[in-house]
Image (cartoon, rainbow, N blue to C red):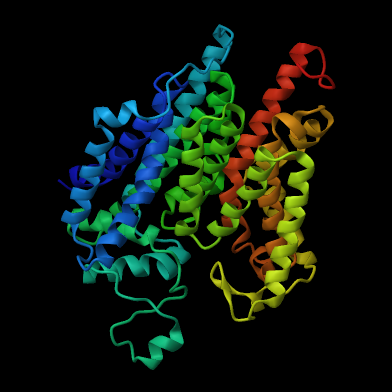
Length: 465
């Protein structure tokens, strides 16, 4: 019975999101089943907690019935025949693919088998292991447990406020102002089960992992990658050790943020190529969801703005806009009150100064530790190749390059030039924040490699195919 309830709790948001994605996507889009199920599942997992917040704000608390009826209603609405006809016109998205030989078929089967095996082992880990990670027990699940017991989103305040009120009607933890999306997702699972279950409440992490793989494969095919290349890089993404760790030791918000930001970036890149409205809608939706997952999500969502400017403006005008944006940001930091909180931290915490130890911590984390396998070396090899291929990063992949470069710059600035360098020195946060950028970085690496293959077939990497 417990297993059936877990399946039902996971299916409801997945079906709701998939129904809306099905209504949004053209019928003949390439890899459509993967796009619908992957994007829809992630969308449903992130929207369901917002529905719970809405009903709680209206005074209904965290009861199952209002959320259940809302999800079912939205699902039926998305499946309405009239809605389907009013969305983007369907047309084919041709992607030439050469016939696969026996060796390529064998490689494809091997990759799929390894992905399936990884899913089975991770499912075993999640289903048998209770809540374990430090941040999960200190920052996230604290809220889930309290809200489950009260059946309502009772307030969390900082330690001083909690002491002033003697704990009357309020609760506290190490980060009381973290977004509520992830704890509410855990509350949803326990509400459906009717009991606090630290293993079952973390099953959405496995579902998010599967959705991320489906999204990456679908967007890769839409970007022009062959089936084998898309599966190969999907395997490279899903086999990243730290990403796997965040599934097996579920409870952190980082994988959800990485999946949402990655999906927004991939949709933005393909929208810039195809100018299809449904891609713009998905990119905007996931960009808006990023700050609702984790405070840092606001920073990553803002990195999409320069890329959007590049897509909509002439290059010179986009460069002027970018410089103006940076100057306005610096001015805002200088004139704003020092106790103003940005992404959960006050401006006083941002103390610009070069931190050599933090830089070394980033280098060790990416290139020496086993957290990222060969991703760092893959990017280190492919990005210079992209720079020597005329027009690769400056025209064909300009939008994607812009957003990934802005996000990477923000990542390095946060650790190397502010007071948060300790998170890189002791490796406490440098890896977790890198998860936010890993899917987008892998997507860029795949497209650079794809461009390299195309130019080799055309007679050399120094000319366009």
